[in-house]
Length: 292
Ligand code: RIB
Image (cartoon, rainbow, N blue to C red; front, side, top):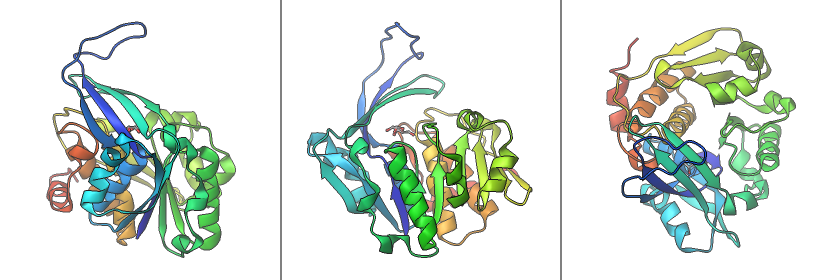
């Protein structure tokens, strides 16, 4: 079973003709309230890709809590480690323009009250995979990754949003996944970062594909599907969740990355984060359409 430790949000999605500049107001189309949050999105993506998934995180005691959890619940993600706290459920204000690009601000709410103590030691058994992002307190995420390493579990960290982390944490991480902007924050030598990790550093570059820098110095270049994007929200989360699902299902890194890339492409051709995530049948059909 894959353990996802991270955020759970409700997304307030507004389609706009163009993203506003500071101080500007733009008129958009009808808004939608959709489940989101990088942790929950990655849990759902992994579950749809065929993994058995447990989510650890927090929601508020408010009307948004049930809506934020509805797709995880419907698809069968185990919510036993999701706590209800006295803070509002996390909420993301998202604007998406006509080219599919987005702009996101997150009110963390209950996510800021998540602690790593909610994860019991028996969830960190050898070979178990723990998947984390940076939308719950960084110190709690770092503490869980260190504890997982001590107990023999493998860790994947998606450094999104880009928050400074102590470089010592690299030694306990199997995989680090970032986009180009987040990677730049870590310096200009991804191969050197990969040498500190247990397996690889994966950098995603949107329509330009992704590169995995392996610990042993090799590189894997992963192509993308040819698509017309309508909304890229959650595409990165789909990539990370499907990658973790593949590794949890004992796939080798390269086929797991190709599957993740195909799934991320499919996630861009419908609106919303969780609402756009493909299932295993769609992903496997799309993998066959990826360039070699
Ligand atoms: O990665 C997309 C997600 O970022 C959204 O679902 C939003 O909730 C923010 O966390």
